[in-house]
Length: 388
Ligand code: KG4
Ligand code: ZN
Image 1 (cartoon, rainbow, N blue to C red):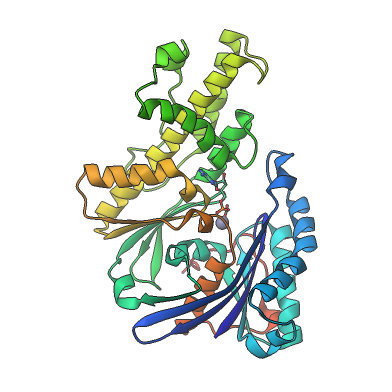
Image 2: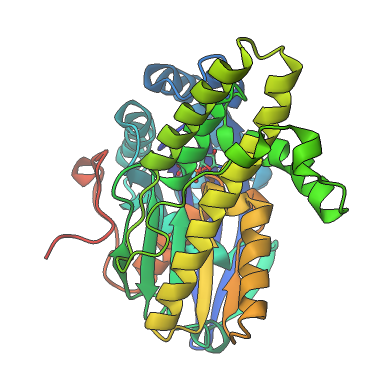
């Protein structure tokens, strides 16, 4: 079957076309198109996503991205009515002005084409992104996939930090979430405090790498680097707590107080100040250490508690190299026979292909064969699992 997908939940306008088939032993995929248009340049100026601007940009870009996807597939516009079996859109969670653009676009297509539509939860896309990349054509052995379960999935994005137990490919339950800020939100807020720009995750990672490279080459001398360095120590909220939940808002506040203290003690007023720049790399490094320590420790603890065979990470923060390294190091150090899976970097952030996968899995599970256009709605707070 052919699935056409639109994703506009946040600040990426994306469209994908996927041919998918479930056989007895294999899931067979053929990626015909995968187009993402990023709005980072627009939102950078404001230090974060401005929802109404995001909506305006989606509106400008959506048919460009759609036309590009049809072109990538080698189709003509008139082919799509004949070829497409199912339309899919991210229906939530996300920013409502953004979601509405994608949802209304797909509703119109469904109405004109008289095709069924599935509204997919954005987090389900991240959850299944470990099955990416799909080469032009790829066969996934169900036997091999099933060997991974039970698995613990850690979704770490700008809006979510969620631990899930995946009993098999289709069955999962939420173990815990964050009590306040998400890990990506924490990266973004700390980057803003450090005046490192948006998006904060990659900016902090780049800054932290300056210090990490010195450490890795035994060239890092804290007291030499900056005489106040011992003060640059951040808390790791809830790292040792019994609860599986996360909490990141305290970390951002700790960075705020730390900056205020350093400014007061050193008369650091401006970002052009050389000392501030030195401190900034150290704070970025320490913040990345704190966030990744928490994620790794809690995910491994949960994996042990549930006797799971695999840890799967996904979402924008899973692009973080230090996070990946720490998972691998820790599993090795503790001699744990636990598989570790992370999607290729390009599929960690928002894309429509991961939504296409999730859509096909819902469809092939027989639970969701699609609805008519008038039954699809955007829901900013869409829950991953319906309340019982
Ligand atoms: O999954 P995603 O693209 O969008 C949401 O669904 O939220 O994730 C975006 C988040 C942002 O907070 C961004 O700062 C973070 O992922 N991020 C990173 C990295 N790349 C993106 N965080 C840490 N390190 C990175 N390399
Ligand atoms: Zn996302």
